[in-house]
Image (tube, rainbow, N blue to C red; front, side, top):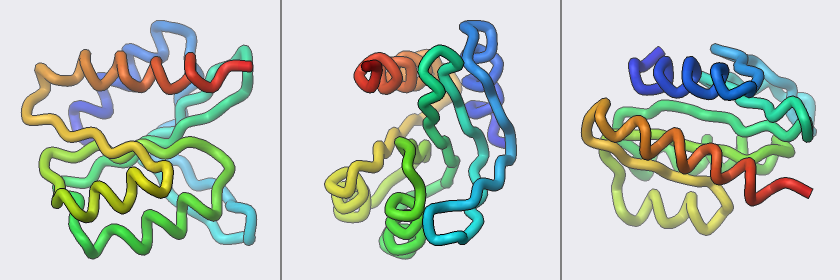
Length: 122
């Protein structure tokens, strides 16, 4: 697992979130999808999937959209680079694409992921 995801997993676990690494989950249509991390808020049972991709580009759009429509949870793609058009298509489909340049950006990514849970409470 990428060092940034390892950091995020450790920090979210310290804050009480349930973390599943290298998770395989069966979707609505019966297909199994693999994720680097599944983060669950134990109080609400809501889940967010996290996947690391070095670079998000056009070749990632269709497979990621299939995951989006096959699963009933929020999805976050973490990358170091992204093609503007591919990232926009994914965002319009409700997938969060977060780009970072160094491990020092990890705390900002962590805050954003926690914000996703706070927005979805209720």
